[in-house]
Image 1 (cartoon, one colour):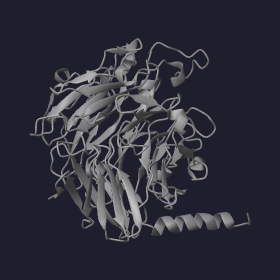
Image 2 (cartoon, one colour):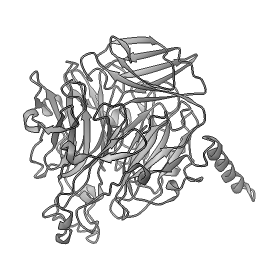
Image 3 (cartoon, helix red, strand yellow):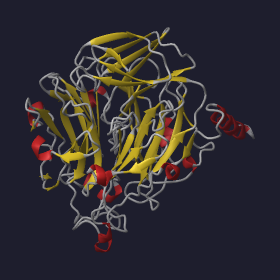
Length: 551
């Protein structure tokens, strides 16, 4: 490289970052304090010394009061007998927090009033309209018993866990059950939502690693815990059917679940990211599932290595109409390109992601179109697992062909500060048509960060909410195809979207400079297909199955 050429490259990157979303000098601005987001993560005491503490907890975006503005539920740790240090007992009964979006850019914390100030060690929460009454209920996943909160429709929730049968077992593989997430979906197409609960480790608080006693034990030193499938019965209760469906893997170590129709055969499959084990792809065969992760190329990375996989993020990164799979992990990370024949190719290195991910522990990674240009970009919250080592987060721009460039390093203050990130969610909290970020951290600051998107480049967009004819069952996992002239863009109306977290439930579609949508095709997950004339852009709309746009 000639002298000075490095400067030219950096200058080019900086100018691109500056003008791609003009007139603002930064891509995102931190607005946590101004918005009233004061969440602090609590890991039960004053020391960071076990894997439960290091795992962090999730964030959930949902509109709990149905006013059209996305609210925020944030899970927290707490002091636990036999796990936390005694001096940390001041943190006993630390509550989760519910932030009500007031529609003016600010939030009000209302967990106590709403009845969801849960005091368990909470990991994640799945919002779902389980009873089809039009409001969002909340399934809370804990280290310990899980809790299902029914939305009463008046701003409050009631615990109906026992009524539904969704508490989960007291223990798995000899230790306290440790749930990390859930995906609700209709696996058998009977019109009722089922639930697949991901469980993590058989965590023994007394165990000390014989090889590195000065450090917390590595996840590979613990046994796993089986993820569990619950089928909804005619009376609304749930029956555990894991073994019956071929899904019982007692020693698996689930970190994240992604449900979608990976092979386009009309039913929904499950990708399960496993910690330092081969990842699973459970193919839906109708009455049972087959685990085919190795066969289709998503079990390990291109070097044949199992990784500390956190979850699967999906999107069409190269614009070929096929849904690709990004799997962040604590060492390598992998981007798998969908080849269209039921298999995947690892393109991590040639995509530019490998170099950016190298040496970083990627916890929550999201594929999202931050600049509304019609292709998914990438965000990653990073940090080390076994030690409290801070790392830079990542914001990477997609050129539309699946090649990514790190643009966060240019001038965005948040992306130039080392943190220890964990969960993250993508959402449009201010309903302005561009996607914002909320990120949790386990470092000594422990603060959540709300990042407002400053991108004002004139690109167009469309926000979609999908409603099935008989509730959400047909909408979850639906495929949406947007036709703009010769261009076709494919999106999945998915469930859980990052590590421990649920992003904005509305499907966000960047349209670039072209405001025209010729037609919209919705392939509902129950097998029905509907085609609608292209709606006007730059707004949020709801499509109801069999009806069309609901104003």
